[in-house]
Length: 92
Image 1: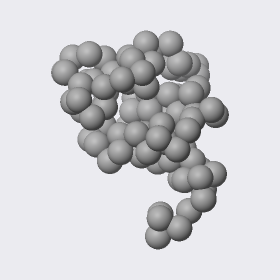
Image 2: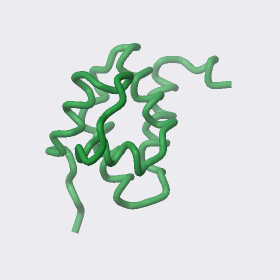
Image 3: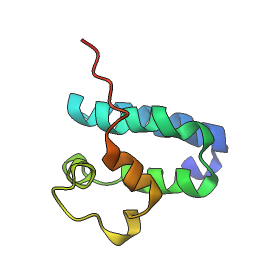
Image 4: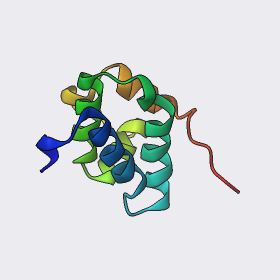
């Protein structure tokens, strides 16, 4: 019943999904991106991220690393921010 979630509830769900992708690399990349940029997201930006979460990790990572072209539906400021990769902090 995701359509019944509030905006904050959707953000909490997106955060969980961003940090539980299945591989450590995807968790850092996608979860780190969420942590860095989501605080001020609008409804439209959250919807973009929710759509991104539906994609395969290997594709999202390839778009972020620019090893595959980004589909038009994901191009824009948020993908450009993801491609900066300056938000990935690897704990040691």
